[in-house]
Length: 500
Image (cartoon, rainbow, N blue to C red; front, side, top):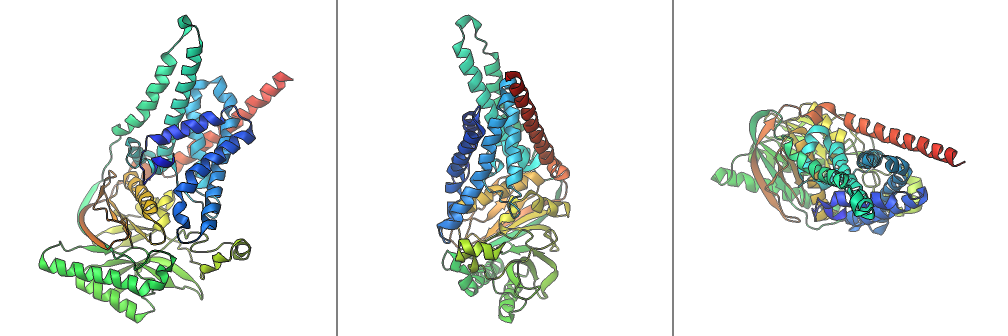
């Protein structure tokens, strides 16, 4: 499963990883199933999340990896628990596998402290035909399709093994062929799903400014004046290129998260620098800013629209709704300090916003989400139902590496397909780029470089089936998983009664 995700991108191996875990946990005791699931989780999450230890030490990486592995331990135990159902009706095993994976991800995406959806099976399929299923049912439908394919592989292997053990005259290969064909048909079926803009709209020219930072690492905050200057200078340079005719004039400029960690609403010099950039390019700039307030000692991670001539448009301000625990705020700080005093590096807790990031710039209505928020289904969907025509992901990858950036870009690709919207990711250091509504990436930048990319995009106003149904596919699939667990309990009790 690990190498199915970026930066490796070998997406066909995700169903194989699902199949191997399902086969390993089948018919095991619950404790053994949990142990196998936990080992699989460590093998998946420890390397995948290794970017978390680049500048913070090993403790956050180890704790986060072990926590995420715990959810796969629950999955392994659940797989062992439903084994009696699979033994009785082997054809049901693919469906059981799919349902249990969706239920596990639904729980992991929400707990604790709002969850951590990184590493969902759906996010490994950015180059797969299964990505197109996101237009019908979002990330949960893609996950269930990946796991269903893995379940088909398990069932085909079991039937093949049993058939081989029979005398030559009694072998029936039809079940093996049927389930193996289903394992191929599920991914191929994704090609039948139409994707693209959900209702064509006007065109808009957008510039992404990736200003870069002097040094990667947590001390990017100490460099905040240099980071702001980098983005101002890159925008002014773009304005000069526009004047010379070398580049088209953008209708909108997007700066990344943390492009101004100096509060431009309270620091006159920072505000003047941003105003100079907006006036030079003669277009509104979406600035990723850290704002002080609303109360004493509080801060906000915000996307703030800055207009040429008039300055900040406070009516078009988005405050990040899902701050990252232990990075942007510290839950139970006194208790957390007993584990590591490093939590006090987060000096002020970020205050969450309360409204979706729907920003009306004039040329376009943006659906703004900040950094890790792109992993959360409802945060992105709320912007689209609120009228967003273009999805914008402002992010700062300066504390991570290129693997994390590419994993995040895979999520942007899924969101573009899910909602039939053009999308973009703007990063301080990379990877930045544009994504079309069918999931294709254009003008992707390098990592740890300064870059400016400009592209004309066609806005979208309609709604895909996934946008319309929202979380209901996940609710229905999770309910079926709970029902399967209950049915397995009934089956186990009957077997014990019969044994007695």
